[in-house]
Image (tube, rainbow, N blue to C red; front, side, top):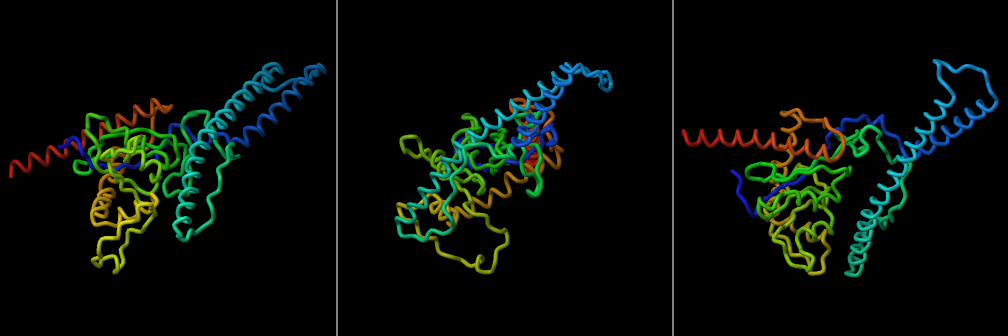
Length: 337
């Protein structure tokens, strides 16, 4: 049912809710404001104690107890801000590499005499932004766009690699990234070596980056790995106009010094590229639909990335068992006929 070696796979990610409410999260800015507010309250309580204020507190509360509670809350908020700052530094390293690649690509286009449109890419900021979040219930989950992107939920980014012929999941992992921009290498690496090498990897525009494609297709010394990536470099509508229906000649090969984006754009315009890329829509997207709609898995039960990853592995295994049953029934019917 599944051939081994030279697999053609489609990879994608889907947002799955974490077992934590987004209302249990605090932003970087709000955490700083709350620390200042708590510090002011601590000072007020200390002043109250020094003045031997006889005004009773409600519900049997004590001044030492209230001071301790606020100091513990301050410490928790400080740890949250430190974690947000560490995440910002890691994010900056990734964004800086992407920024430098974009700048180099624009420079190469100008050197070839090509027209370069749009504004120059903005350099990333190394520090956290005011709205960066930390969740106290499940700190390893993240606020991510959900559904059509009009609202946000506390989630994980569940990734799957699906073989196009059998529609069996051959690789899976869980990411904390709210998008797939830096996930291509790690997601394809989740396919175990026992499955054999990948011949073709099909991904949408959200996965594409020149550096990631090069890392998949070439070894460190520049040798071909035998894997070819087909990634959309721009979003296109599903509707085809009359001109799209006409037979066209194969597009002219890009020049040797063409950018990675130009090479990928040409690759998807070829007859082979079009045929292969069409397989992506009917491969990995239905798998996520079955997992969420048929198996009813829309939220993790466990907390923390390690436990969530184990849970996602079990879900993918459950899907594969269901798929194998369906494939086996089809083989029995074919044999009976």
